[in-house]
Amino acid sequence: MSVLKSSDIGAATFAPFRPGVDALILYGTPGAGPAAALLRYRPGAKVAAHQHAGHELVYVLSGSQSDDRGTHLAGTLVLNAPGSEHEVESVEGCLVLVVWEQAIVFG
Image (cartoon, rainbow, N blue to C red; front, side, top):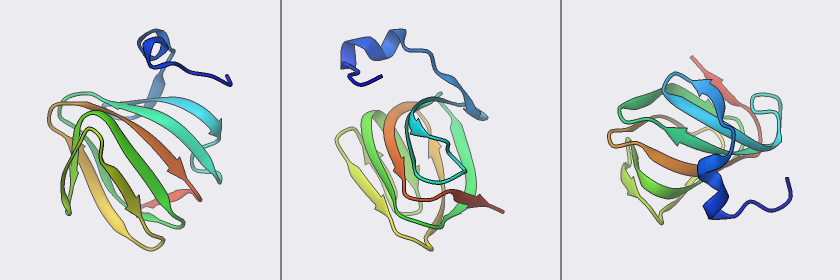
């Protein structure tokens, strides 16, 4: 896939990624090195505490997600630095673009 228009996202095939979170992988293999994906959080979805081995860039496309730094609304760009830790939840559900420099580490 080289071009994905916003009008095409609703018809795209997302696959289960984490409980309550589905992913459309754009490149790479999450957990195995550099990767990018669209993540669709269902309302109430939570991602357990994890640490970032490399940079993680998150752009909130719709809805909102929260972590220990606050609630990030649509249009917010979040950069998580290497070594940072957090857990993420989305009360209302959201769609985010995420780019991982390296795999994230749980627990």
